[in-house]
Image 1 (cartoon, chains in turn green, red):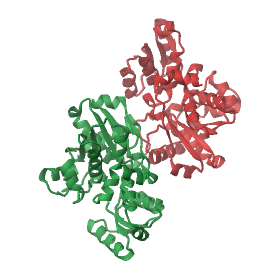
Image 2 (image 1 turned 90 degrees about the vertical axis):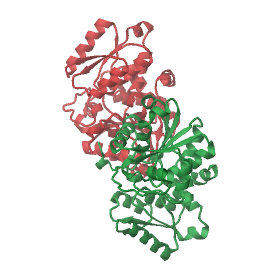
Image 3 (image 1 turned 30 degrees about the vertical axis):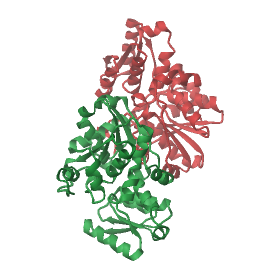
Image 4 (image 1 turned 90 degrees about the horizontal axis):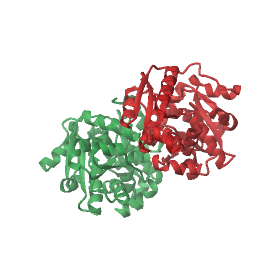
Length: 306
Length: 306
């Protein structure tokens, strides 16, 4: 993991880790908050995006990259491509927030709009691959992306080797997959737990059933966690993640507010799912050193839940 | 100033300094944000409070300290007194937010409620001084407090000696007074500017007239800046501060939102007044290295202006 971290280092921020006496008191353990909300483009996703691009051959790079995303990965891939001087083609659904479309545009990417369905997004991306020769990069279900996302936990554990438990939000599985790879490589004894919205609990059910389950609803404020696991990250998660805890919308909002009030930082609801999971389960982690990956800080201030 | 910074160091956080490429682009200069919103009790005020207590004789300390405040200084003095193991008596008006009253209580201070007028607050404090022998500590108009507040700028300039301009919000004058003392001691060439709400522009007018002016209205969202200068900090400000810029409520809210969105941190409206002042005047600071003291992050998330 050191090699990957070194490789992407010029293109990302080494994010700070915050602690709070008052939150330690509340949770009954020592919590180390890894602030990916301060990361370039406001989320951890540029770690995987830049690693994916750096893993391409010069020939591939010359033809650019393509993805479909309405959210943080669109910005991350556009920014990483811009930093690395290659073309990025981003398929964005018609209902993507204008602020995110504008950000992707500002990074110099070519944007292709489509209907807001998975089918339309995938078809548009396929068409672009065929037309341009660009390489498709998946937001979460691709080994180079998963490895890149793991560098956040790698940095955290290098700085605080006393951490023996890590909480991560679970969406498409890229972050938790990478985190568990980094953690187990550092020390087999480190336990990784996921926090997932009850309203989009595909990963929780996938660990129960042993196969990839889909979300029945995605009606959660944690907009980054509405996606589902994929065939590359699922086996990693199934074999190495300790447990996934589901949290209610009320718990997510309360955890988000708690972090804003006590740490004085802006985190998005997806990040709060991991905090909510520790809060809910705190009696099981009494006195331990616990890391939490605060995955991002992209939130619409005009539409806050409090 | 080093001596004072060393003296209070065990009781405060050395706060981090954040920077942002995108904000540098927007402002056309290199901005260094000194994050007192991450300070203990959520604002810079514990710097002055702890220095004031540390400047007392053992005899004085044994009898405790008293102040009147509805806001950040109440919490700061209560916390500093608790850390230093002495009594604190805090006069708080009936209309002080319950959350702040609770915080002061949690730090172990004795709270005395009074009517929400300056007269009632001063009388209650006087009475307590007489009854308990406790020493009165003023939130902003007292040399030991002013000196303590200056340690934020001292830390900033030690870390980034290339800074030649500092922006600070102006309320009671303690922070800008201390900042200019620290700046000029470091280097006479460093220029200090204030940002003040148009709706509470006593300091702006005081610099014009050469005498301490009162606020005619205090109808500003920047609740920490509704107070006025005093006889100890005014001469320092009059002689050494370069200029005070007044900013509208719209400018304050826009600057607050900008910092939340780009730096992903929570600052209170008072801090945003300094950011708004630089934003308004940016054409005068093109290409320069500019420090801004983000004074605090205590904001009611249920009552946001956006």
